Amino acid sequence: MDDGLTGLARVRADYIASLRQRRLVGGVVLILFAALMATGFVLANAENSGGFWRGLPHIFDFPAEILSEAARKVGELPGLLVHYIPALVETLNIAAIATLIGTLGGGLFSMLATPGLALWPRAIPVFRRIMDLCRAFPEIVVALVLIYVMGGGPVPATIAITIHSVGALGKFFSEVNENADLKPVEGLTSVGAGWLQRIWLGVVPQVAPNYLSYALLRFEINIRASAILGFVGAGGIGYELRNAISWGKGRYDAAAAVFILLILTIMVVDQTSSALRNRLTKGA
Image (cartoon, rainbow, N blue to C red; front, top):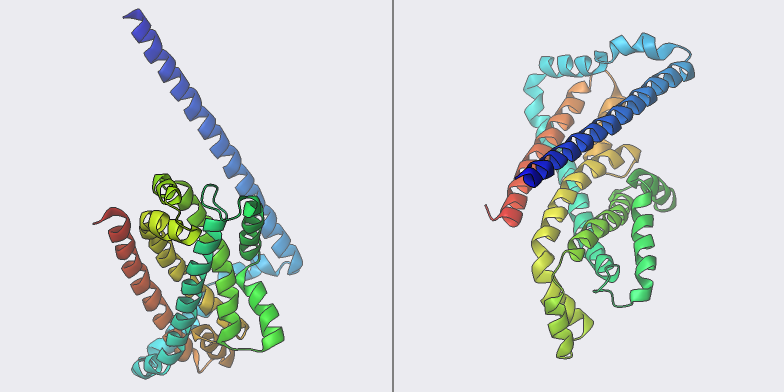
């Protein structure tokens, strides 16, 4: 009985010590974050010759101008929404193609970079570094380089988002692969199945739901990325938003229409993909 109480007390003491350690680490991280934020504000103020703090109270002036002009021209919004639907479709196409190719490429690289599944085990570090490199550079940096080489349009945006998607999804897929049961693979190997047969028949059925879940999540991210890349001339609804804002007062209703379309699209895609992910992963 005494041993049981002693063991319980030891467990309780270990738990309290662990809890204190987590709180200490959390406090240190919070202090560092606050210090970095304060330093960033100071640097921003210095770079703008003191204009940062003076301009901070006016941060909502521009959104207020857009909303007030859109309210005055509310009767024109339906026509503007219809006008910008083709640009929205282009943005969705960019995100969908990039997600599809990124899923296929990320899946292939993840298989080649997972111990126990790799076709060339010695090349595992090479494929992992390739995935690291693909996601190391932000999409906007890659898009700017491609726009300089290829010119503006949706193609540079698609390539840039695809490259990043391959790296990001390859990382997620690798973690899924590591939890796969290798017994089916070993059974297929024993009967002389090739590498593609082992992967397709022994691994893909296990990982497919998680793969699709991550791909849907990536599709949401890619919609936002393709919209942002439009600001640098990569086409889509982001390009139309940049033009609408650059026109200035008198055309802010167009900017409001683009914002409404973009927000509604992201909300619909987010809710739809969340429902599909829950169905895939939980069977709900």
